[in-house]
Structure formats: C-alpha cells, structure tokens
Amino acid sequence: MSRTVVITGASDGIGAAAAKMLAYPGDTLVVVGRSPEKTRAIASELEADYFLADFTDLAQVRELAASLAAKYPRIEVLANNAGGIMGDRVETVDGHEKTFQVNHLAPFLLTNLLMETLVASRAAVINTSSAAHKFMAKFDIDDLDAKKHYSANAAYGNAKLANILFTKELQRRFGDHGISAVAFHPGVVGSNFSVEAKGANRLAYAGFAKRFMLSPEQGADTLLWLATTTAGQDWTPGEYYAKRKVAKSSKTAQDAALAKELWERSAAMVGLG
Image (cartoon, rainbow, N blue to C red; front, side, top):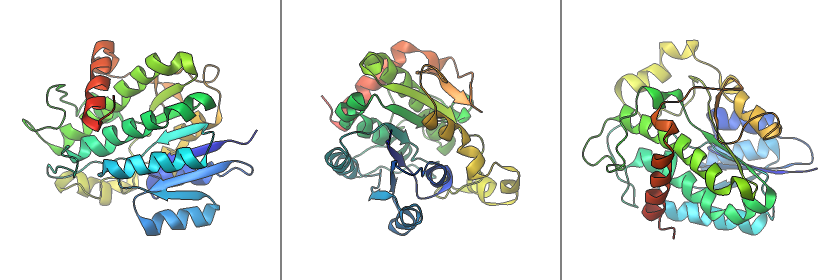
C-alpha cells in the first residue's frame, strides 16, 4: 500500500538523509525545508513533493499545515525533524524564544493542525529529540521562553525535553484514536544543525571533532526504522528510542503531569483552543 510520508527539516542533515532512504517507489514523499535552494534540490533529486516553511514564523507553519491537509487526504508518517541549537537569545516574530519555537512550538502546532488527517490515517508521528535533554535541560514550566534565564545549551536541552514530553502526551491523548507517537535520539551527528550556534557549540560541530561524529545517514537510521516498521509490533508508541531500542530518558521526561501542563501551555502559546 502506498503511503504519504512528510519530513520536516529535510533540506539538510539527517532529514535529507532520511528522505533519500525513504524515497520508495509508489509512496508520496513530501520534504519540508526552510532553504528554497536546498529544499528544491532534494525534492528534484528524489522526485518528491516539497514545501517551504520557516519555523521561526508560526504563520508559515499554519500555511504549511493548510497546504498539506488540502493536498494529501492521508498522511501515514509525519517526521517532525526540523530543529537546531541557536546562539544568543532571540525572540521570533511571534514573541517566543527562537530555540523553543523552532524545536517544539512549531512541530506542536503543525501536528495539531494536521490531527484530523493524522488520526484518519492512523499515522506515526516521529519526533526528533536528543540525549541532550538529560544533561543540558534546566526546565522551568513557568519560563518556557527563557526570559528569566537563558543559555544556548539549556534552551536546546529544554526543547529536546519538550519533544519527549510532547510525544508522551500526544500518545496519551490520541493513541486510542490511532496515533502512534514516538521520540528518538539520532546520536551526535556531524551536520549543519548548529549553524546558528556560537562559540564551542559551533566549533565542535564544524571543526575537528566533526570527523568523530556520526554521518547524517547513520543519524537517520532510527528515524528510517521507525518510519518503515509497525507501531505496537516493532516499537512501542509513547517511548523514546536510540539505536533502534528503547532508551532511558530523564526523570523529568517521564513526568506525566508536566507533559499535560506543557501541552496546555504550548496550546495557549500558539493560539490553539
């Protein structure tokens, strides 16, 4: 049976690598990226559909969701992969801290706006998180936009923690309706996801250390596996994976009450009822 597979952050890094590996004959592959040149190039190479969206602007996320829902009556896989580690604290046009919006609020909004289609498709929603949530996060539910305290590392860790909390609450709310949500850690990948970072973070991902990191193809392996196997049979919805196995997440990531509160606050931040 043919499927529609949507991958965000697909113009570079593990998103582009996953797209190339998921370009199956008969399936409809949809790549979403911020860069017009890179996104068009990937789409052309794979003969895939493509959409442009900058996740620092939630209006573009809403436009993306509307376009996807209008064109595709079914979406069997939504891979929320767009994200990155940033530098100085910057607020988006929507008034939110950039790292939190790009990594969490934007995919949260996109998923919710597509929920009717995803439920009807019994879709897998795959969220790219990171083991960084265990040692970088300094999560404060009352300071999601990091107005009181900000560091690039903490902002990234908090956003990756939010990805797991979102996954667990998405599964709690919509698992009985057919959604299979899962989060995963791709590993330390030598890609351009830190292009906006500064100092040690940028040097680490662009310099000498990069040769010891995973390739984008290696980093995309677990995403590929989750997207091509069966939820409930090959992997457990609501869990956090690394190297194709359930991985240990932080205690905070397993807090069901926090996951519920994050959902409610995120919904208010993006204007969902």
